[in-house]
Length: 231
Image 1: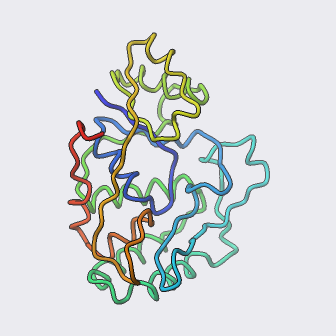
Image 2 (image 1 turned 120 degrees about the horizontal axis):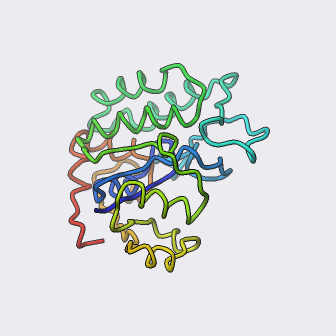
């Protein structure tokens, strides 16, 4: 049984969803700490001038001692409206803009100031939109309280996983010997980014999910149909 896990992410890229599709169980890591300059609270959209970051402002005071569940968005800043205006201006010519934008508007304008809750709510939306049925669990709903490599190992044990599907950066911190001792294999995702019709010149990979979604609509799910033996 394959398990994967990832921190919450704002408008995740296609590889995030590919990992979920490839897994039997996915764990949403809302018990880890906030990291600056990560994809937790920001992602990219494509513009005529190239990629542009959309960043959710967060209140970072004391974040070193708190988890993502306790990280609050800065609602004193009109970031929701700004992001929607940027997306509208960049994608109004996209094939599925009229179908998708009202849904995104409703999603982004839903009140709430917890970063983890915002990402969780959005993740549920995208999974339904792309008909991804992999069971999703929150790490905060499990009894596991360890850190780093031990956190992942203990989550695998808790859910009865026989293999952990890691992102490429897992090589920097996973203790593979500990996994082997527990009888759990480790595989690393080898995501081959698909191409699709895209606005503004030559194809630019690794955009936030709105890029593929605005250009492909519900057909975005077809970009994620990969067999596990291709990992």
